[in-house]
Length: 144
Image (cartoon, rainbow, N blue to C red; front, top):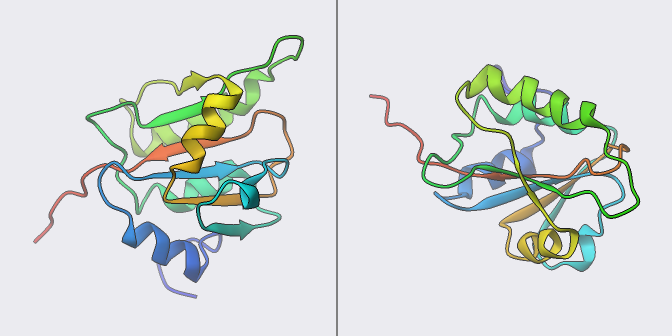
């Protein structure tokens, strides 16, 4: 373990976040997400919920300011959306990036297509439906 690094961030995820560049995207996927069949590298965070992962990632990760930095899957016809999922995520996001707008909602197949182009997919222990979240990395400020 490292001081100042969340217990939810393993070494592979830390290295992945470090290697990402401006505009790269990472998918924080729920436990139902077909990550292994989409193509990008898959990391596992079994037993960790997306909000917990956000708590560990966002102190290390600048969100994009040139394009919408958050995206979630749109609810399919006939399904119900649990508004607490987005609320839980945004509660954490706004602690680190207060001005960030709510996630854009993307149709299911378009979400999968976008995930195919992601830098990586993190499969989590999130079991709530529509619990997938894409983060777009921004430019990390230079601190001397």
